[in-house]
Length: 102
Image (cartoon, rainbow, N blue to C red; front, side, top):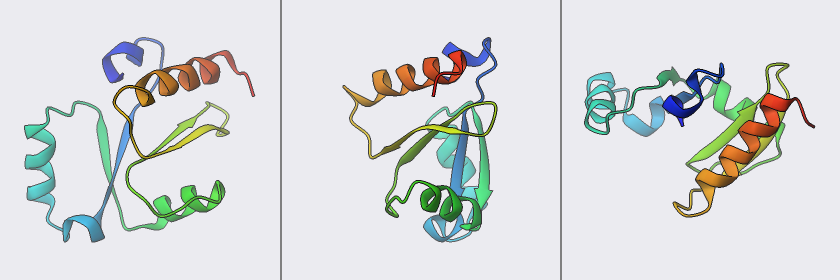
């Protein structure tokens, strides 16, 4: 989706959790390279992740996806991943965000 939506101004950001990776940045960088992850990834001490999850009254599970509009509004929140359904649902949410629909 990074490639698909980049030209339309969509930014994909991965959120890496230090408690999940034992603060081993080399291991995380190697993992991202192995998976050929091209979008930005940021390291979080839990502050951002906790705030995002609390904002949607969610659970502490991985993975989670947040589609956030330019105005900062969370358009859609996904918990978990289903390879057949989730990508299309995420695309729909991104399109909704790009159109500015609530």
